[in-house]
Length: 292
Image (cartoon, rainbow, N blue to C red; front, side):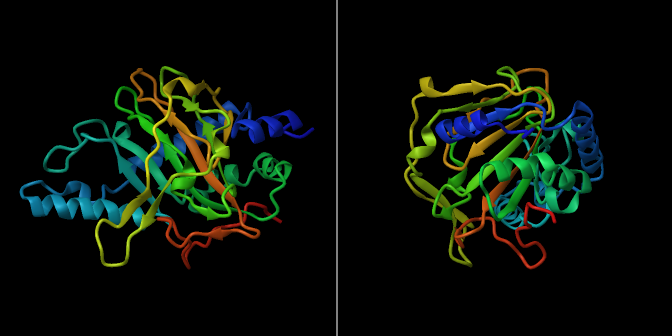
């Protein structure tokens, strides 16, 4: 029996998202969390996070360091921190494990457990059920949504950041490694909002200019009442169309909301924008999802 039913496909096409329970077992979720705990324990804090603010110039260098660290992270495993976790000397003022906002963007390539989940028969089956002929993996992230400090993610469309021509070729898979609830910051969607295109894009700026990325187009405002909360049980996955509008609230609970998420793209007859922040590299071209 297919993991994804015809009704699931219909809901995804109509609403722009669908929840599928049981992509991973609780044990598989715990193994991914344990491995991430080991990765964070061994991490080196990037130098720009340790820069002391003393002058405006220092602050500029720190900002530029942050931006460069991000824009070159597509083929690496790098660490992105919550606000306010370092003192002015760059030392942790919260426990290390509680400091990280996310880790990205190439876990799917370099970490065997994450690679196995990304290419699992169920994930490949989802792509085949949706009729994808040549899907490739764009990026992957581990998102912590830390208790009490996990920040809000404002309404957005993934295609703003991962733009293709034509549109409609990118899908996110968002796997809950713990129960995602209204209290700890689950996703909220506007059903059907994937049919209206996008109004703005994040693009690379010309080489040698700063900032390294900028937004073009206009930011949309959305009616809060249209958002629908989407809780997910541990091990479940949300399929997210690249243009569906979604957000998540800050985590004000005492529970974390760990997630492994990655994006895939139908590569056949698709142009990946050279203006996107994320670009394939010689070290890591976008790998095919389907394994022989």
